[in-house]
Amino acid sequence: MPKYVPVSQVGVLLPHVKSLIALLAKVKTIDSNGRVVMATGHANPQDHVLLAREARAQGVEVMLTHPSAAVTMDMKKEVASLGGYIEVMADFNQWGGDAKEKADYVAEVIKGVGPNTYCLDRTAGRWITPSRPTAMSSPREPCGREVFLIVS
Image 1 (cartoon, helix red, strand yellow):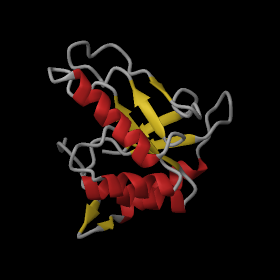
Image 2 (cartoon, rainbow, N blue to C red):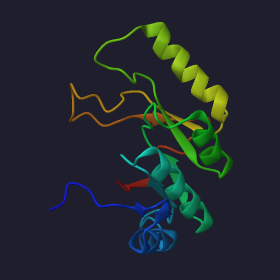
Image 3 (cartoon, one colour):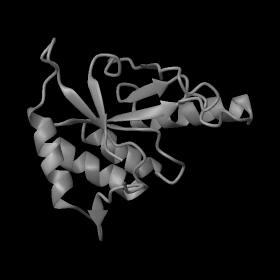
Image 4 (cartoon, one colour):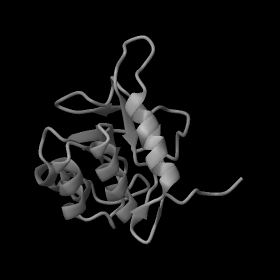
């Protein structure tokens, strides 16, 4: 099994990715008939944006998940402008670091993308406790009510 499946080539999403997004556009949850949200997973910065553009063009909700520092604020703002959610890890450096630096980072992202667009990941997928589920919240409460499919 490959370690990863490429989603783009020379800045263009591959056909199988577009087909998957088209399928997600038709999917609803069984018990609530709710929408499905595509999470971008461990994509590279450019692929986060390409996935978000295509998902929104096909009517699929999208969340840019745990974006690295390489994902610029402009990229985050573009995804937010498309109606996507941006995950902000409250403890983005769980193995150490300054608490004020962490709080400043979270505030910067929330101010940059807007308070109705972010999802706060309070556990940051802690590597110390991998079996503990990630808890998310947002002013619009998008993160606890939909099904997230990771594309990475």
